[in-house]
Image (cartoon, rainbow, N blue to C red; front, side, top):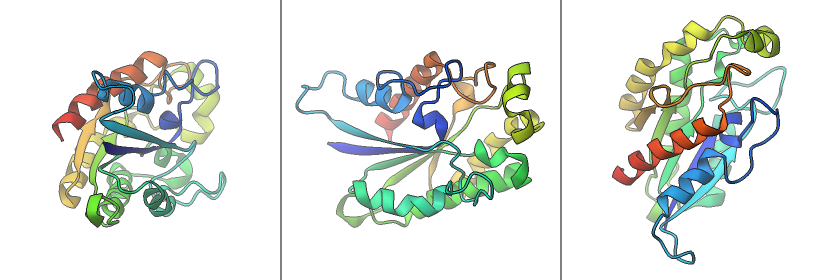
Length: 217
């Protein structure tokens, strides 16, 4: 049985942009991924084990002076070691790095996620103390809507255009550290209900796309 660790922010945690609660286990994309990867397997002999590790507000490697303990790089190694051996780490970070307080550039955001990917690759938490495989997932662009501006405008500012420029930087960052990468913006869209989080159907779409990618990896 292969172990896949899904490491991300509130969209991996499963924040519902409409109800402002957490989606249930049947809806969140890591759990949908688990179900898809194990289709056709006996219930007592799954081929994959999928671990959810999402935290609301998690950044790639930045210390948040307002929201506090959200540094994804700093939290990574204890989490990897607690679930080892891990065959594959799926990293879905970068959205919270867009916050105005960080004054981000697309180069810096992708570079922050690359540091997380590199730490996973250097962690020796794969089978036989080897490196796990790593997939960097570029988040979809933020949707500029009246609800986004009402709920998150002060926090994120005018970052819609900035968020749409991330994919080529993620591609280059993954190439530099030896990770794979995936552009989720080609598959899913953030909800206009708050501009940042994903609705139920988008969770399923992402899980279906990643299931195909993971099988090939």
